[in-house]
Length: 506
Ligand code: NG6
Ligand code: CA
Image 1 (cartoon, rainbow, N blue to C red):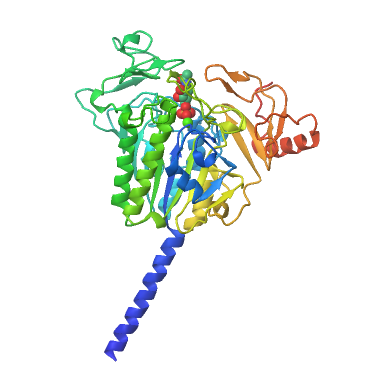
Image 2 (cartoon, rainbow, N blue to C red):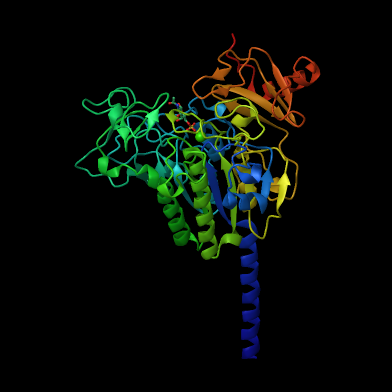
């Protein structure tokens, strides 16, 4: 009798453990968002690049759901990251524009965020890499506790660079404190004026190892002229050529030390944003100069990261979403051969425009979801946007969330449906446009048609523009005049979301 009882309990125990394991596998996988900086729609071999090979990222695309209509919310970094983390369109927040390194945090600490939602669902949360959403409450003392920041909007742990690799401060910030700061050499940052006696890109060209083409002529760190002025904090300065390795070690450590219960890791690589400083191991490898080399470096980092997930035995229990914050740019302020050595490579693929542009290459980016053993490999033309991660992942983990503009795209993300959003409001600078189905409508704006510094077509015109992206992915044929009914339909749907007060033409 006793033995039978024990056996029964054991049997029930096994059943429960199995049920739990099953539940864990289907509802609470680890979630990793891998986010690149300025990687274009055509920059990966899985997305058609022929001049560069990205075998590790290709695994995510070819063995997961590869979206051909995946969008960032904006054609620049800060607003896209805002949309990704809050589920709210960045044009709703006037502060969600490219930020200086001294900008205060632009996400309200009371606001819903992706990491907060996942924390409520029992996840451990971390951000490692580029931040660029502001830090502190204004007038930040970089020698003290820099708050509010990532830790106050839902990340248990943060190891970040404040803004961009080309902006000061050029230090890593660990949970709100400058990592490696020597208190005897306090750090000061200013975006308006230099500190007396500090060299700059304008005054001291002899100190430069990289030359600036536009902007980027303030303080010099590691021979690279930056945006903004800095003084002190020398021991804490990062090494540019080791940055990718540095973040890689951090994400690998994070996985090793947090693998026992579900985690959300936002791994925000800085490549191929300027200044492009691939480690010497990658220099010359692409034949395309530092931009191509930096892409190869990022690809390698992601391969190493995947190896770690595998080695730690959690690859099949981890959903990975890969994307980029905005489209590609070649000369973004430094002479680094990106233009000269481009050859036949097309960073935007067949799309028109690039970073900063209302044309499609500004916001249409590589986007894929990979979950080994759970997601069936496929190409999906469903219209999805990074702003949708909040609602989609909330559904996955069974959490409630304040949805904002986020739409539940869990089924397309898992490859179980090809039905995406009906439409998206897309942003470039202060202007917005509207994609609906295969169509995109760009309202009239005044301003330059071309950014002469980066040589990007901005999509700005005094005329209405209407394109059918399915037939005309390069946006060569403006159908606004020949299809007024479609134009009217899109304009009305756009204004219903965006309101009527979007134009800069008075
Ligand atoms: C621009 C910078 C550019 C880049 C960009 C932000 C100049 C002339 N250009 O203002 O180099 O830093 O801001 O890029 O300073 S993003 O990907 O973070 O949005
Ligand atoms: Ca960017």
